[in-house]
Image (cartoon, rainbow, N blue to C red; front, side):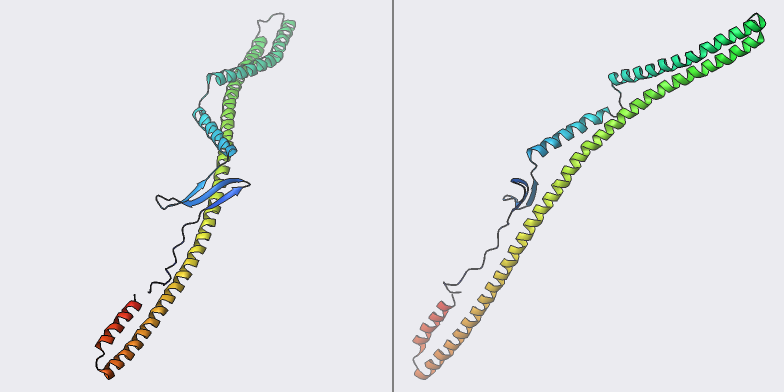
Length: 251
């Protein structure tokens, strides 16, 4: 259009957004000036960053120990098993020894000698009871060791899950804050783009109207000039001048 025509509205630049927790910025969305990519960045505060680091370190320390028994823990398990065995043997002997003594005294008083089938039968019964008890105590002691090792590993797994919960909670906060930041930025930029499209549409419509008006004016002027040239005979000079004016108006 003419030299004084209004220029087209410029497309809006991308507007960034931030999410704050009090005065701390926890998430931001912006356009990378180099690549043009939309970037959403989570910004943990110092306490969160320290908590994440501690949780990661704790998990990394636990993982190699799973399924393994350190010499120190193995010694503790052996001591616990031995303590049980000693206590169980003491309890058994408190019952076994008096029974053996009673058997001997009973047989000696009845038969005057221990060299009898009754004594040997009773002794065999007591010895079988003793063998079964010793085997049971030894098996229980091994079970205690196994239970302690399992309990230790379960405690380690539970601790790892707890640390993982810290990281999971932080990840949830990250996702929520990042989504909030991205949605806020998207909504703002959608609105600005919508406004720009309306302005551009209005500008285009105005330009088209001006072109149509100018075309109508040029056609009208051409008809007037053409009529004058026909009636005056020497109108070629005027016609050339008028053509130049119309060309200037169309610039």
